[in-house]
Length: 67
Ligand SMILES: [Zn+2]
Image (cartoon, rainbow, N blue to C red):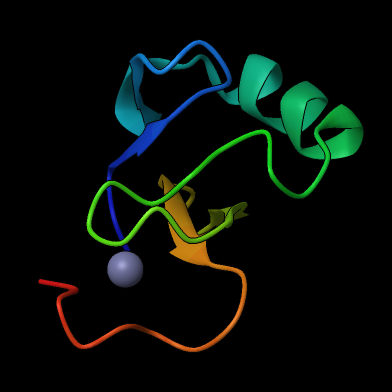
């Protein structure tokens, strides 16, 4: 899991900087490939932890370079 991902413009998106409602809206409309993991450029998916914190995760398996 990661707090930061690259968006379609190649800029960093920081999960914790999104409002919870904004995050949920994005979760509903993003497509696989809209966000990329900064570690390996693999597609990222948007997730919310059980305690409500937004984060990015690898679409497929964690890569070896993930922190
Ligand atoms: Zn990775």
